[in-house]
Length: 339
Ligand code: UDP
Image 1: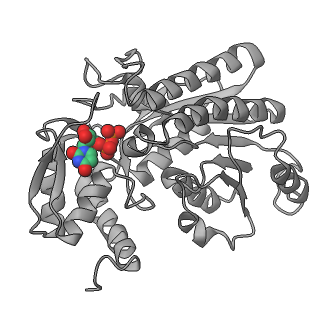
Image 2: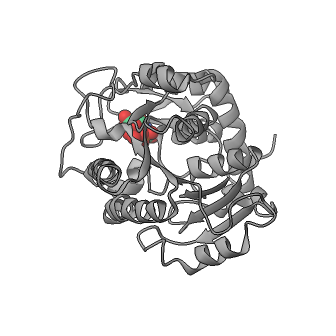
């Protein structure tokens, strides 16, 4: 099949591109590299079944000349129907809280909303199945735990996280309206905290911060008292869930939670990282950002039932693989000496 991945140079998007190529698909990766990085797809660029297009999903995809050129060229030798996109994964959006809470906030909402409209218009034109990467952030600071898909959330509509939370909620609404009124073939997944290779060491999320700090012997920055919880899913497990959802039966639209249901406090995560890195770093406590969710943990019974999906990688294994990845990144940047 010919598969388009928007946000394909980002953390999850690039891991997904890699997986889709392994599965034998023709992959078009589209990104404006606003928060993504060409480093993440460097190893894919020589693959004849892979095309990278630099483009912003805030602009019409039906008018994207590079995409039209790519579609008219490819097709004859790959077994895909010429000119047709079969599946679209919409992964494009800044996703790290420090990124979307700062100068990128307005771009974040635009990417969520205009991006959704543009991928949906393209999907309808191609009769492609289109999957929206929604988020656990649609639940805001939840007052029920674990969160199941029927929970409608507790979002501050004008706080510093709103650009992402409300942007993604609006995107979900667009997806379902396109399905109801324009026959779009949609799938919606709500992604919970995910970590692993291809995360940007500087993106400010807790796993990347703690590992990079521990490796460099810098104090680990715990926000608040570290009692807030998250449940961390290794990226390979998440990608497996995305692929299963995309290929699920046509009348299962979601939304479906994808995440690892093992819940940890941020302080527990810090201790795990310190032990695995064997670091002598200490913990320093900083202010908790506004609207930071106190508890977050997915109820994944729907994904288990409909997709037969359950995460396989436990936290220690995933952290060890991530530590190896970040070590290499820091060495390449001259921030860490080779062993
Ligand atoms: N956090 C922290 N130290 C950091 C970065 C984040 O204590 O250096 C906390 C943050 O306040 C939140 C949790 O870790 O409670 C997860 O943050 P992250 O940015 O990874 O993702 P979020 O779940 O907030 O989207």
